[in-house]
Amino acid sequence: MALEIRPMEAADVPAVAAIESAVFSEPWSGKSFLEMLEREDTLYLTAVSEGKIAGMCGLLIGPYEAELFNVAVAPDLQGKGIAGRMLPELLRRGFERGVREFTLEVRASNRVAIHLYEKNGFVAEGVRPHFYLNPEEDALIMWNRG
Image (tube, rainbow, N blue to C red):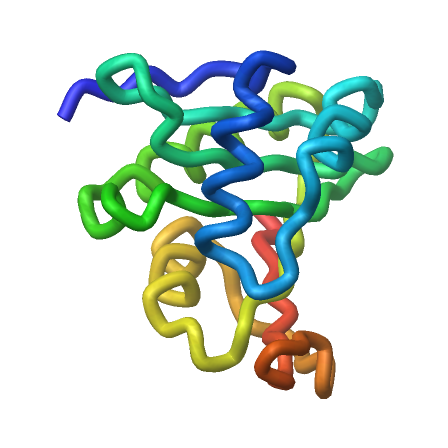
């Protein structure tokens, strides 16, 4: 599958918001994505296949660490390695911007995502009880400390 991974643009937001709504039980709005794109301390990427937004991922960047947000792939394209290609690119670009440690929360039951994160150097270091709603569930706190 030919895949271009590039910075998210405002024109991508309707497709990104549709993926977000299809994948997450508490999705961000298109307005939230537009607000994130206007910030200097964020980095959002989209994966594009055959002219269609296939997935997205983002970082909120602090002085030396960043938090991953919105790692998602369109439901009809899941299982094709898209997230596995986006995530290393996001980490690489974050590292270029001075990030030395990355963190994220993931549903404790999301074995596919946990495996992806582990393959990219993340280790579970804690739990946030009752972090997620719809359904209520704990989050694993994972870190990649380089």
